[in-house]
Length: 475
Image 1 (cartoon, rainbow, N blue to C red):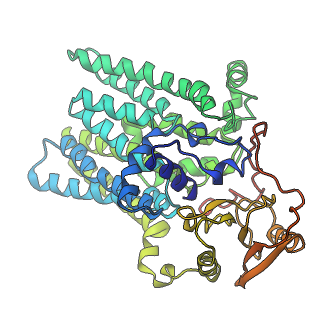
Image 2: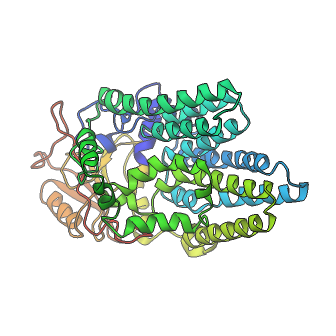
Image 3: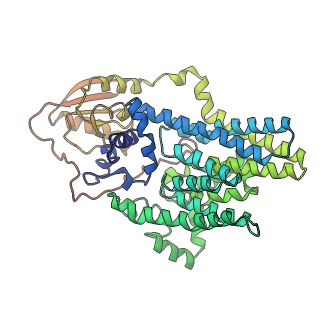
């Protein structure tokens, strides 16, 4: 949340999306742009929100609006799929599809996790499918272009939709449909290749920084050679953890496997392969935003399947499968998100969270701060903030929890050890409540080991603690 706030604020001031929360912690050189992390220039479209209210919460408002923008698109997709049904059936289908989409557990989990560029991906996928279904090829092309500007890997999904479009239009008379199909099939993967290989490094990124496929090879070329020589490596990687088949089973269960009967589901294949073949346990959990990328694809494919069944006269089967899918999906939503809205306790902050908020208020505007991951978004719009990660940065204030582990610390005692170290080297404690401390640097001597990334610094990824990803729901 804090990273995206700093980045969008950069756009709002007509600059690059620079984030000290990201760059300092990962040791990127000064001036590193978030475009060198993930290529998401579409986030610049949120800049006008900051001209209305310069506050990180505008990101949540914007994301909610983007998710909500998918509701009329889902209704249009459903209306077209059930064009031959009578008015009463169509009304029920449209309302049911909109409800299942809007209360989808992937959107609820993603919203609970904060802000992410997936906020743009969800409605843009739906716009791509809806415009293509209406045979409005210019609108579909625009949606595809914006998807490629949302995240560097989405070009692969765009290319897959190009293949689906070509297959559906085989033997058809619409020349522009085929032109667009070929353009997406070739242009989508090409856009991803250019963004990953050229544009991200040009913005200060490191080639291969997010390569998480060591089981297959050290890089993409080596992985391809290994897989061509031994295709069984893909199977071994896909089943290297029991959470991977569990993830696939969960996606099928909550949609009653309806998407599998529509070619649109193939669009999800590259995004699923990225996660299933990954060595990163974060990619296997349903407790993060990754499934929201899949949700518009799965919902559209399910609607198309039901529409085909209805058009062929299988009314009873369509009703049964549609009702089953809706019940399973909404039950998952109730278990994973909706209950948070209904239980009063969930609206109350935990003692440590409330203490972080109280401590943050004591930090003056314009100060330099090392901040706990959870409280950072409360400070990004009025201080110069970077992540408290156990490496001394020599900043004026440090705010962190020290009785429970927080990202990016690896062990429970590390925060307490860091607090003790700072107190012994020039910091004074101003606040200590509910396991939260606020320290201020009052000494004159530099803090031993304090450093900030310089021009020659080498970026790194933190090591994921071994217990992360072992719980399928909580990650």
